[in-house]
Each structure stands twice: as C-alpha cells, then as structure tokens.
Image 1 (spheres, helix red, strand yellow):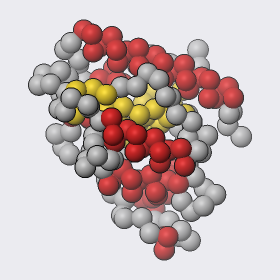
Image 2 (image 1 turned 30 degrees about the horizontal axis):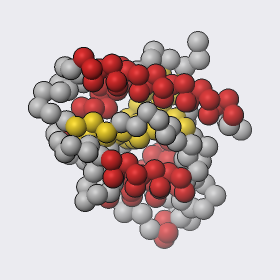
Image 3 (image 1 turned 90 degrees about the vertical axis):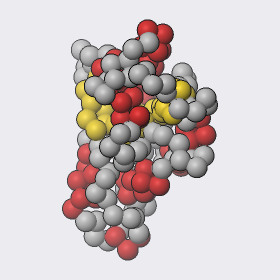
Length: 189
C-alpha cells in the first residue's frame, strides 16, 4: 500500500470558515492511503518580486511544505465571484520566482462550499485558470459545488446528510485515483 502525502489549503482565513469544516470532513472521508496536512498561508506577507532574490523564512518554509507533498487539495470559498485574495497571494508565493514553481506537475483538486445555491462554482473556475498557468494537473471530475446548510457539517468534520457523505467519500476516492495516475505519468524527478 502506497501512502500519498496531501497538502490542503483552506482558502478562507476566517476562524468560523465553512470551508474549514468541509476540509475536516474530506480528511475524515478520504481513503486511508492519503495522509493530510494543512498548509497555512496566514503569515505570508503580500508577494512582491522584490522578494525573489531572498525569500523570507516564512515563505521558504511554506514553499517547502508544498514541495514535499504528492498532491494539493484546495478547499475554498468564493469572494466577489473569485478566489479570496489571501489564497491568490499564497499561490503567487509558491509559484515564484520563474522556474521555481512548487505546483508544477503536482496533482491538484478544487472543492468548496458556501450558503449560495451555486456553491463556489465561479471561484473554482477562477482557481482552475490560475492552476492551469501553474502547470498543476487538475482533477476535472467529479466537480463539487457544495451548498452549505446549517448543520450539514459539524465543527469536527462530521457530515450529517448521508447523500453528502457518500458524494464526498466518492470525491476523495476519485482524488486518490487521480493522484496515482498523475504520479505514474509524472513521477518525481
């Protein structure tokens, strides 16, 4: 049995993030062959090319955390029909300077939840565009736009609706299969 190390991003910095609850649920429902670690970007300063010659220690540690993973899971809300600014900043840090992109050839998946009926569909499209530029192979199906209703997921990540549990468990099984495919075709150098 091969274990794959998955880093995950929660796109919201909010202490009451619905997407943090979703991330906890996904970790609980994932196949046992996947090990998870949240990669925090809370302490990153705003990216500027002025840092390219000498990344601050927090940014080096952050980028090293991504590099050490087999795959990345993005769990993000939608802010103003796009991804949160802090998440975009984090992606910029990880993908710069040119030629040192930590996301290149790294399996990725995108999911999110919001109270709105379309979930986080537009944010996910925006994020997929950014990840395409970063050369991150993306799991394109199944898509997952979760409408969050009160009580759907507890604070510790327990999903209370059986059909949602089944859907999310399948989503994570598909992500596992996708990671295997990407690692087979694009092995680490």
